[in-house]
Image (tube, rainbow, N blue to C red; front, side, top):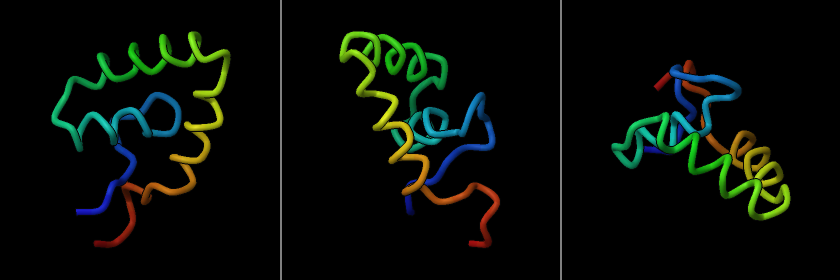
Length: 62
């Protein structure tokens, strides 16, 4: 299965999609993502944008 964004989304569904892929709680993934973004002085924003563009749309025909 291809990595795709989630319908359980707050912004773009990237963290929700990663949580579904790794079978984790979406809130945990979001909190870890925010902490890592703050620690990396904003590099996480670039990573989020790239993942948003690369990951499949959740409503795309399968």
